[in-house]
Each structure stands twice: as structure tokens, then as C-alpha cells.
Amino acid sequence: METQKQRTQIFLVLVPHRDVRLVLRNYSAALFKAGVAGAYHFPWAAPLAVLSHSFNTDELKHCARSIREAAGGGKINAVEAAAAFPALDQTVEGCALFGPRLDLAITPNAFGSGASKVTDLFSPPVIGACLTPETSTLPPPPQLSFRAAAVANMFWRPLQASGAQRGDAIGYKWKIGKLYWLPSVRKKG
Image (cartoon, rainbow, N blue to C red; front, side, top):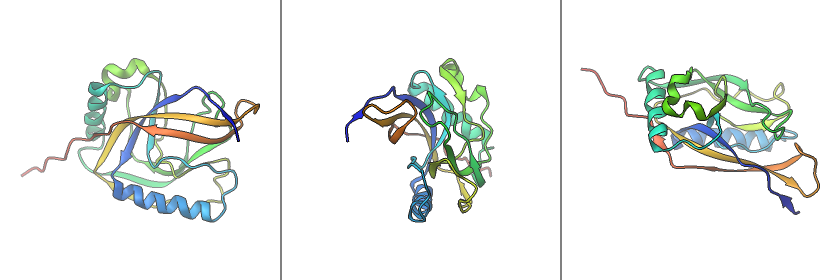
């Protein structure tokens, strides 16, 4: 099937450690095995913001430090199911990002000098298990708690069949850039 290119969108994402991503991958696989209608795969990362341009190294490092501070230097907890995904360029109209909601409040200060590149925020942040038009019948996502995570630019593009109407995606393609890990937690004592 021939596809046509769409404009690539850029997100700032929080990527949990691979051990957490394994739990999420297994949960996503269970959702798709159960036959979630109209669902699309989504990387096991939490979109934090929509960007007009990708963040540079210094901006990503600043975000990593700010997120560590926002977590109080401790663990980031993911609890209960949540759905949030702004309809950007009508490419995911009617779909919600389903997965565990992070108990993390991101303020505009977290973006530092990159704040002018932020065009929209994802609130609350949700680690993606899938994009789906229906969330009421899905089993609850796993509760997670983690310290190790990184921030990165994620490049996102819908794939459409040739001649399809805007918003009629047949799938999505993404690439996550270099990971910038949140600073390690210093033990007091």
C-alpha cells in the first residue's frame, strides 16, 4: 500500500528505564492480543510537550534536571489509567493516549531556554501503551514506580494511504532521539 508523507511533529518525551518499558510492552501486547479495536501502537514513553523545534542538548539537560527536582529527587509513580492526546493537525482525532498516568507536574520553568519552542503541554503526562478511540473497556494499566528515566526529542509522523483524507491514518512512525538521563539521586547521610 502506498503511503504519503505528512508533516513530522516533535514531542518532548520522558522515557522510563528499559525494565519499566518491558512491563509496558507486555501490557501493550496483552491489549492488542485481546483485540482492542482501532488501536495503534505508541512508544513506551510519556509525551510532555509539543515542540515547534527539537530541543538542543543544553535544553534537554535542563529539562532532565527540572524533572528530577519535580519528582522531589525520588521516584516517579504511575498510577491509574488516563487518556490524553491533543488532536494535533487532526492526525489523531478521536484517539486517546492510554496508559499509566504519571504523578508528575511539569511547569513551564522545566523547559528553561527552550520554553519558546513549547506549543502545547500534555497534562497529565501518560506513558503510552496504545492510541485508541475507546478506553472504557480496557483493563487498567500496571502501577509503576521508577527513578531511572530520560528525556528526549521524539519525531512523530502519521502514515496515510494515498488519496486518504487528512486524519485517516493507517499507522504512525516515530523515532526517539538521544536520551538525556535524569540526574542520579544523591543519598543524604
